Length: 226
Image (cartoon, rainbow, N blue to C red):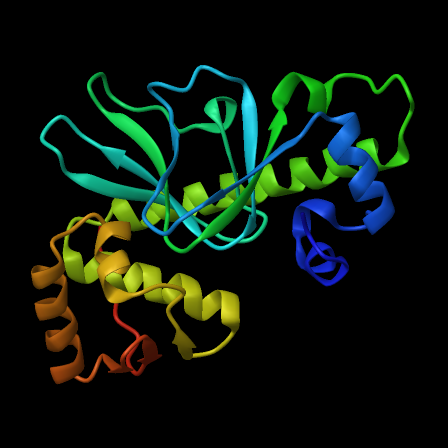
């Protein structure tokens, strides 16, 4: 269960008091579970419930594994991140979708039909939670659009520059810190880590970027191809 301070920082519960949050857990028949790092939280192939998972603490990743065993990160899930069968990305036959912990996680599961059906008690926090959930889904759609933009680029170089430019525009700065490790970045742009590291070195050698670990500075504006 979230503390008052944690609740205030969680976008799903924006505008909801701690006392209403406690009532909501009962009203929605919510279930809270804890997981260890690297533990499987949700398997879309074997989980047949309509529950929506909400990351209350920690971080996780939505991962697609194709028939050849290649893993691709579809989405990073931080505090307030949501997932579930009704929110899943479609995949090819033979692909599997999993949500796996990056760090130890506390996850709240809410029944999907219960969330969106009319509340018999006319709870004000119910309406607020639905509004917040719709906002998170809108953010999810935007993130998917940005991801597609990155993956549509043909070369590793263009994928990297496209992603770097997205972050630069969001932060309004040519210098920014990547939200995850370089290994996860390789998964995010769906490429081999060694090949990506070689391309990063070329970008540094050519003076296109400067980098120090996860901190990147865009030095030159380079046209990105498709």
